[in-house]
Length: 122
Image 1 (cartoon, rainbow, N blue to C red):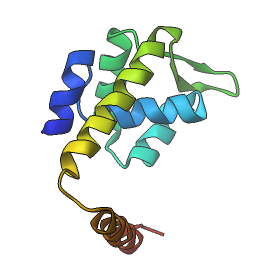
Image 2: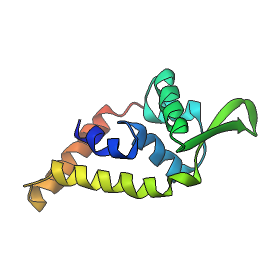
Image 3: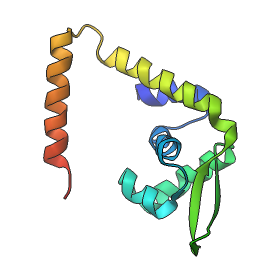
């Protein structure tokens, strides 16, 4: 809920930051790949992309390698959004880890990495 609250001023909903981060880091992606990468239902990703497109953060275009597929790409208009999302993430991390010592943060990082490995589907 806190993440959603921090993203709301930028016109974003929870989860959209992960989609945008993927586009910023890897460039245009097929919508079907975003479904897999985010581990979400195709209809959920489709709604996310529609909302982001309506907000002017992404655009969809035909994949030049496969005209049946759509590529989703970040728009140039979202340059400020990158900074805003990063700031929101830093704020969320600061809030989540408030009062933790450096040793506790290190232990938490190792424990969460272990949990992630346990839950990663091969």
